[in-house]
Amino acid sequence: MNNHIDVVVVGAGPVGLLTAIELTLAGARVLVLERLATASMASKAMGIGPLGCEALQRRGMADSIAVAEARTFAAIKQFTQQTGGPDLRGRESKFTGHFAGLSLIRKDAQKEPQRRARPVDQQAVEAMLADRARSLGIEVRRECDVTNFVQQEDAVDVKWVSPAGASQIRCSYLVGCDGGRSSIRKMAGFDFPGTAPTMTMYQAVAEIDHPERLLPSGWHRTPGGVFSYGPFPGRLVMLDFSGPPEDRQAPVTPDEIEAVLRRVSGADVRVKALESGSRWTDNTRLADSYRKGRVLLAGDAAHVHTPFGGQGLGLGLVDAANLGWKLAAVVRGEMPDSLLDTYTAERRPIAEAVLANTLAQMAIMRPDPQAGAIRDIVAKLMQFDDVNRFIGEIMSGLSIRYDLGSERDDVGRLSGDRPIRHGGADVPLYDLMQDGMGVLLDATSDGKASRLVASGTLSIRCVTIDKGPSMLIRPDACIAWSGEETDGLQEALARWFSPALDGGRDPNNDHFCHGPPHLRSVEQPLKPWSNPSGLPWSRPMP
Image (tube, rainbow, N blue to C red; front, side, top):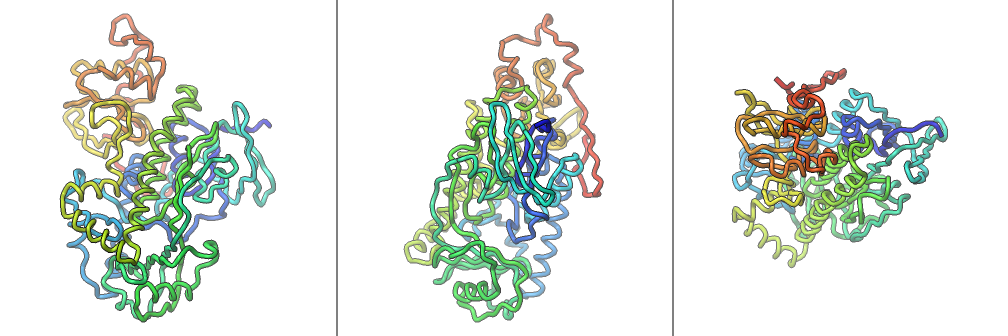
């Protein structure tokens, strides 16, 4: 076999595409294989959490997100005009998100209310990622169904079939981003324990004969289940607790949607037309590890749960952001294979917490008196700021802090975008991260932190800042180190970027030199990228 590539990514949904983008930016050669002929237009995620949004903003999609969000707000306005419902803008200015249909998460109780979820649907996210992948020259082959792969000591041999026939390729690593029924996970033999389904959740876009009977917009818990109509024209979400579907893969019909809607809402309504419909269950499972040798999992391939609360898409995108730069560093030979073990160590506990909160939400939405009593208590507890903040942070993911062994609270957290005071001007942090490099914010008076970084790696952009603390930020926005001087910086660099620095040598010593460090990484310019589609990109670095 003479064809070889660094990484094969299976799945061209949002998680697979972002994984491929991260790998490519970091210098790996990638091939994406997708079973479907075209992007799925099924109704899926209708929004994206703050951490997922930030992963896209760091890669040049901030303006595209804003355009998609404006489109959603226009649809909400249209819905309000059509139904004559109340103006929700005042409520939206005070509240952000919900827990188990309790829309009580207050912005004023959150530490970082500016880091918010955005009403951008999955199709829009996938489209902007596809455009970014094309701009990077990433090859995405559709109608390619992976049939088998074999792990070798130093490679993985992957086989697939397509309309053109059977094909195969050898890669250094294989990443499964092929969804909850992942064939890669199954063929690799990952354990996938969890809880069996007990109910059915529907999402549909339908024309209703008397939509006013389903108002007001928002979540309604009834003796038959839970439903929501809006806030977009025709959008329905229904939770049916009568049991899981006999055949989840069977086409969703107008008669099925109508029957469930009438039973759950208790309203005398008819479905005149069905534009789209899909169903899920509360099947909740988590892979025992995200890695088996040279095979890795990301997104729904590694974890499945109910989509309630809109956490799944963002969870998968942050998986991709965490994995991509690490895998590329290993492929380039700059970091040891053991770096990949930190992917499972960091991301699996986060998924475990999401699975737990979705199970809790389902438990207090069931249409029985016991669940209702607990739900009432939760609603009362959310009146307390600390509880409200706690619920808000677990739903947004902003409580994430990877255990990097530091006593400093900021180390291990994912940094949001913020202005960096540099040379007397404010530069947005994410503008420094568009090409996938790590960032050192150097507040040391003589620039010794930058010299230390420059002596060991070219993978970090060093930026002098006017005010401390200094920070080392990984490509996934995780703060790997912070401090007033350089204590601990060398260890952090060795752990995440340059093992050679683990020898304890001090590059600030006049006798230590690997060439001109001040020219090797300090103030490295951003790499430009073309945007043939014309979609907006975030601001260039001044």
